[in-house]
Amino acid sequence: MTIKAKPILGITMGDPTGIGPEIVAKALATDNIYKICMPVVVGDANIMQQAVEIADVDLDIRSISKVTEAKFEFGHMDVIDLKNVDVTKLEHGKVSAMAGAAAFAAVKKVIELALDREIDGTVTVPINKEALNKAGYDFSGHTEIYAHFTGAKDYAMLLVYRNVRIIHVSTHVSLREAIKLVKKDRIVKVIELLNDACKKLGVQSPKIGVAGLNPHASDGGLFGDEEKKEIIPAIEKTRNKGILVDGPVPPDTLFSKLKGGWYDGAVAMYHDQGHIPLKVIGFIWDKKTKKWKSVSGVNITLGLPIVRTSVDHGTAFEIAGKGIALPDSLIYAIEFAAKLVSN
Image (cartoon, rainbow, N blue to C red; front, side):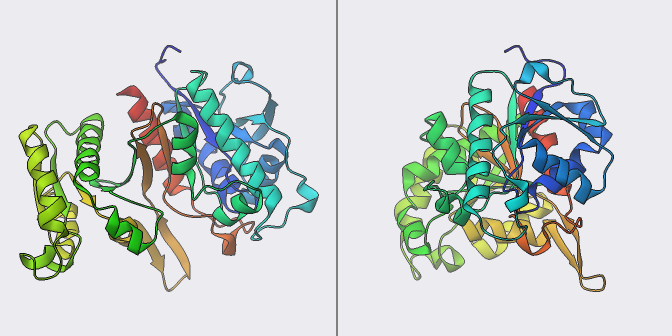
């Protein structure tokens, strides 16, 4: 489809027993969202009506069956209604096969809409992996679902918070498996994906820092040889392609340099190596009020034929249904999706 001045973004409802529907309601109650995009929610209209009541926001739910029926008016939430949740049997904060199936159906539908060019980009909110598996879907997360249904082979997870951009060589695997996945060709690919993403996000000549796998980036081979055998050859190959790359940088200093602006993006070798530093700065707990002051960060899947951004947090079952979930991360995800589509 032709990209309009404001892109059409499909937003999934997430797991209906978690905070996903609530933060969607809160985000779409923000008039600025309608200034940058035309949002349409994919999920169950009854769940979204319940979410509006939980979030205590003034939104009218409009149940539709296709994108062309959407009016994209602030104050009205257009919901492509999959009609697949029995609200009377729903219990917030509990793993449910019904909820897992509904969450999966919303993700699959939004991918189909994007592939068919009925929407310009996709934004996802949290799903629960255990619920997915209870419903019979053997996926470890959104990234793997998107890769499966789009046929993507070379893809990677990018986390963004303000000027901090972190891509991952591997994500949802055991630490033992993650070490095995530190390979030259994979590292080259994620460096290239990060370089391209930085440019799409407005950085003209990105400088990228690459983390070592081992403490002190192995200290010349004292603590492992992955740096010498895999990481350094990957860095040299991407430098020869004209990309500004530095490393391997000891992991305990790389992310401080990244936060300070030394680098425009960083390559983490595995899930926690990249997630922990971003969440330390983007997630702020207030001990006095016993509430989160900020839950910020965006998850972007690179290497797909469609745009996909997401919140960088989970279903938060412990606060689901209480009306206190923050929509910050989702608002950022919507803003980034609009920007990526425009670029």
